[in-house]
Length: 242
Ligand code: C5P
Image 1 (cartoon, helix red, strand yellow):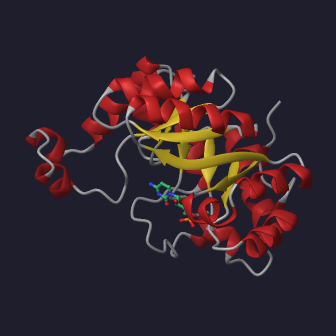
Image 2 (tube, rainbow, N blue to C red):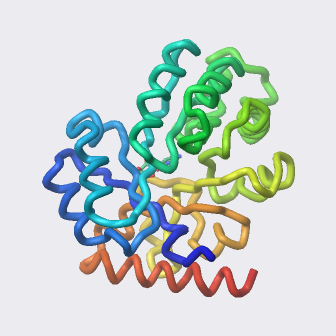
């Protein structure tokens, strides 16, 4: 049975091994997963993965957002699968072959999440990239199209906004995993930082999200461990009610 803390993914958005170590020691076994992104992985390499694994039972999400020719993606995935991480990411991109290569390269040893449309991309960007007018007017159509492509290729889920979860679950399937960033607890709702389309942990859970990426509300708290526990309690309440 999943515990509330299992829903929380804490991104290690720090530039050095030393800083990452501080948060790993503090939050190991208090959140469900650590997300290692490009900045930290480029700086610290596989050693950061091994350190997390030695420290506790908190899982790892290696967020490398692969995007290359299918052969290269497959070979990269063959290396990633040796790490024993729970999830990694690949862009849905322009064709299904890259997604299929990611899935076959993983050999079922790491969950593959598709990146549909980055939240930094606007309708205007989509138009100037040459996509159909309808996607520029409403990018959620493109998000859904790419989520379906990820499902067809055999991916395990997608990273999406908490506001897109219900749509994706409805159209792609309940068991298709949704990982949602842009989360701000009710007690921090006024502090969205640079996140534009935010949801509270409770809203994301009620919409059906499987995992919540929560960074700054934990990292910037006076007591990050207490903040993680408080968020876990909010999640627990939402699970009971949904
Ligand atoms: O909670 P906070 O805003 O600090 O979380 C930021 C994290 O969420 C970063 O690791 C960022 O890469 C990730 N993320 C995001 N928006 C997306 C996808 C991922 O902020 N659309």
